[in-house]
Structures are given as structure tokens and as C-alpha cells.
Image (cartoon, rainbow, N blue to C red; front, side, top):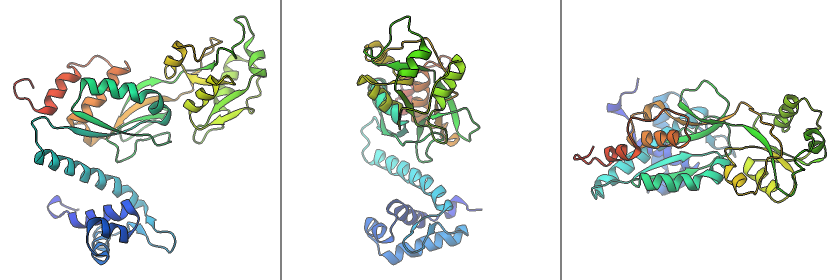
Length: 321
């Protein structure tokens, strides 16, 4: 087993640079050392681990599975060390802390701004770096905190439900039928808007709604969008009807940009969860943001202390902590 007393820090730094640039030459330039030195460090690290970290085939240089697993852990560790050292060097009494936060694309587009404004107002010493990869499932290994869009599943992360998605047909007011319209007849003549789900048929949600409502509907027609935000934008332009989460698009419904012409509601099994890695449970800033998000979306019992009180623990004010 590798003991922390003998951690090969220079080799790990070389590996991180090569993994970040996917080039020995660029890594050497970034670290201001020779390419041969970088190569020696990486080879020594591979020898220590007993497995290659890079696939060195011609025209196909990249990370192996072992390298892909190690890189985000090393990068995150170096980021935290760099931040801690800079905090000490530039200590002004109250230390800023950056969190790398991963949000699903539509969640980021529709909710990141109010979240950023509200959280920054309450916790000004924690800065959020927002990333929005287009993916369904687990958080990236190098993210401090992630909101993930997924079905309930076993995970090695610490996961809390924010809300379960409830889908309803939404459209522009100009497209909406009269109040007593038959849903089956209206949907049969409307342009259906689909949201792509990884590994699922594009028409799955409309098919589930039709089955639940016991209506016949040709669900294979219509447009397909990568995100629900794009589907909603298309619907708000005055064309088509989309199955969207009422909670996610509450502001557009309240403003009259979207309307729900029918009472139909579908629980497709997906939800929004906040996830962190178990080793980060004791990190005050990560715990602060996680608790704040759970309170913000109302799916957890009240906390025993406010986010502002936890903020004091991060700053380290001995008189009020």
C-alpha cells in the first residue's frame, strides 16, 4: 500500500499536467521543465502503480481507465492545496472559498442565476464555479458539489433528493385549446416536443403519458431537443407542446409565457438530487452549500442552525462561532 509519507508529489504533478493537456510537450511547457523530466516522472508513477496511465498508441494518445480515474482526484487535491496556500499568503481575516458546482444544463440555465444571487447574499465568502455538462447520472469526480438529474439509484456518493420531476403538457397561450377541449383530440393534431434522455427512446415520456391517460397518440412524430430548456423556448415561440416539469418552469407559467391546458401530470421516475463525495462531508463550505440547497428546495427537515451561522464557522470568528 502507498503511504502518504512517500507520496510521489512531483510525479503526480507531472501526471496531472500531462492529463490536463494530453501532451507531454505542453505539460513540460506549463511546468517549465524538460519533456524528458515529465516523461521520467510519469513512467515512475506508472511503475509504482503497476499499470499504465496513458494510452500511447500513435494518433490515439489519451488516458487509460486507471488514468481517467486518478486524474480528477489529483486535480481536485491540487486545487484545494493551491487554494489553501493562497488563503494563507493573502490572509485578510476573512477567507474566500471557491466551490466547483456541477449543474444539469436546463437547471443551470433556468435556476443558476437566482441560486447564485441568493446564496451569495447569504454566504458572501463562498464563491461558486458553475459547470453544466450535458449528462444524466453521477457527479463528475472533480466536482465539489453536483446537482444530478437521475432516477433513484445506488451510489457511492452522499445523495439528497431536491424534488421529483412531475411532467405536464405546456404550450404557448396562443397554442392552447379552449377550456373544454378533449386532450386526445388536441394532442393528436399538435406538434409534440420531445426532450432527449440518455439511453431512452425519444418518445418515452409522451408514450407514458398517453398510456396513463388511456388515449391513443402517435408519439413518434415531432421535434427532439437536447434539453428541456430548449424545448420550452421552442414552445414559448408559439409552436408545439412539450412535457415539462412544472416546478422547473414555474416562473414561465406565472408570467404567462407557458400555460398548462390540461390537468394531466406524469411522474416519469426522474428527479433532481444534490450529491457530494463521502470524504467531503466534513468540509464546512461544501456542507454549507449542500444544506442551503436542501433548504432552498424544501425537501428536508429544518436544519438546527442557519447557513449564516455555518458561515461564521468557515470564517473562523472565535467570538461568534
